[in-house]
Figure 1 (tube, helix red, strand yellow):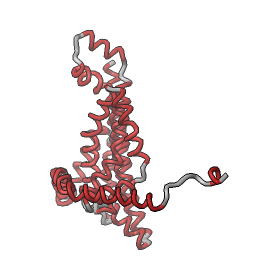
Figure 2 (tube, rainbow, N blue to C red):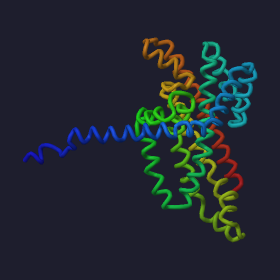
Figure 3 (tube, rainbow, N blue to C red):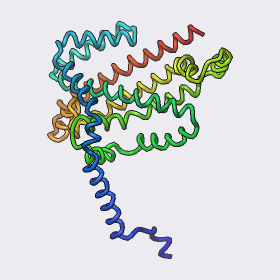
Figure 4 (cartoon, helix red, strand yellow):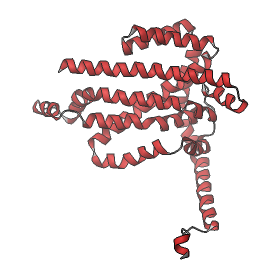
Length: 294
């Protein structure tokens, strides 16, 4: 009856030795390869530092004007352009300009990394059922594992700083663009593919001229979700040395400063709304253009 009342367990000594072995093994790996891995990400670090300095040191009217221009290019909505510029003016007025620019820099770089890495992986998944079955569990793990858990090996491997924070944001935000790239390419109309084959298109030509253009609305939906998830990670990334709006929020939690936390939290919300509306409307414009072509 004891078998049914108590689940079988590894004895404590064996469990302790197993945990100790895993920890020591990863520490040895960190000592052996940590510097090499960190140097591999140096170009990304330099780009992030350069972009952050550019945004912080450039005259604020030019920066806000550029954001307004990007909002217009993405949405073609004068209301959204005015709303974007007002949001950044209010953020600056309440003394959050530098932290906001640092957040915009890391979100921009992490989104760019996710696009560069995620879209090719999504294309690979769309072309191979075996690759899809192999990669989907990894994406599931990346989306479901608590973010604090994968901060541990990143910190052990790379320490505290901008690069570990950037990697943490990318790991958390990567899955949507991979999944929706795969979905978008798989859902391309078979008649369009058959027509391209009839004209003698190679697999690469079909991908570049038919599949990717027709799946762009879905891919941009993935980019939209990636940006939202990257913004959601800002506060947690600030725990390992990433500058931005997350640091004042952490300070407000530890010191119980309601106003400080609310103001910076609302600034993150404003950024999320701007990014969301611009990318959504850009995707809708692509969809509308695609419908007109048909």
